Length: 317
Image 1 (cartoon, helix red, strand yellow):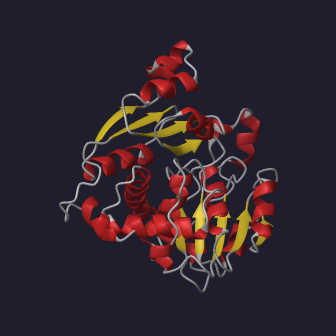
Image 2 (cartoon, rainbow, N blue to C red):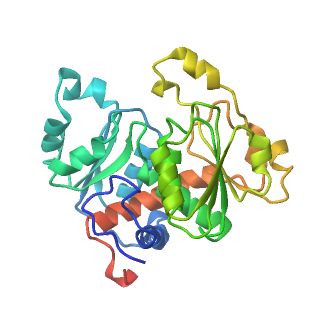
Image 3 (cartoon, rainbow, N blue to C red):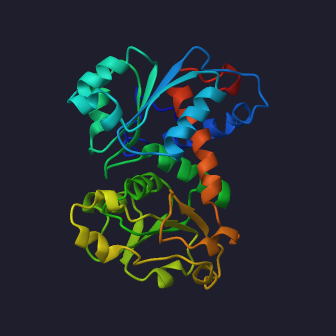
C-alpha cells in the first residue's frame, strides 16, 4: 500500500497500484463506521459541499451518506446550471472561490472535461472529481474496483469485458486506466464502429503491459470473461440525434447470454440502466451492480477521510 500524496482526486491516471490498494483497504476498514457499528466519527466538524452541474442519484447521495456517517455535515447544490449563480453567468473559478469558504472539501460534477483539474488549481480545499463530462469518473472506478476485488477476490489475472458506447463513457475510461495497473489483466472492448475507446487510453494500456482486443460481438466476447461491465448509451453526450439512434439498443446483456460461458462473471453497471442490461440478469449469480452502489459509500468515505487527513490512528494507515 502507498498512501496518495495528492491534495485532490481529479483522475485515476495519477494513481499507482499502491495508491489504489491503499484507498480500497481504507474503504473496507471504514465499513463498521458506515454500518453504524463503530462510534468513531473521524470527520466530526468537517463539511462537504456536493456541487453538481449535472444530474446524479448514486454519486451525490453516496457522498452525502458517507459524510453524515463519518460525523460530518453536508451542504449541497444539485443541477447547479439552473439553481446557482452559474445560471447568471458565474465562472467555475469564481464559483469555487466562493464555495470553498463554506466547506472543507468539494465533490464536483461538471459537464466539461478537465473541469476538476481546473478547479483544483485554484481551490484552497480538496476537490474530488465526481465526473467531468466524457473524461473521467475516478470515484466510480474506485468503487468498481472494490466491487471486482470483493466479487473475484483479486484485481490481478482477470479478463475484463467492457461493452457499450466506449467513446463517451467516463466510467469505462477510468476503469480501463485503473485496472491497467494490475498484473495480467486482459481487456475486451465491445462497441459499434465509431464508438471506440480513446486511442491514448489504448496506448497506455499497451504500455503498461496489458493485452486488449476490440470487437463488435458481445456474445462471443462473454466466453471466459471474469468481469463484464455494461454501460448506458448516454443520450446527453450526443449532439447528433442520428448518431445516438445508430447505437441505441445495439447491445442488451441477458442471463441466457451469460450462461453460455463456462465461468460465472461478475456483472457490473454504473447505472442507471436503460436498454443494455436485461432484468433477467438481476438473479444471475454474478450480478453485482446493486452491491456496487453500496460500495460507493465506502470508497467515497475513504477518499474524504484520507484527503482531510483524518484516518483514525488505530487503523495503522
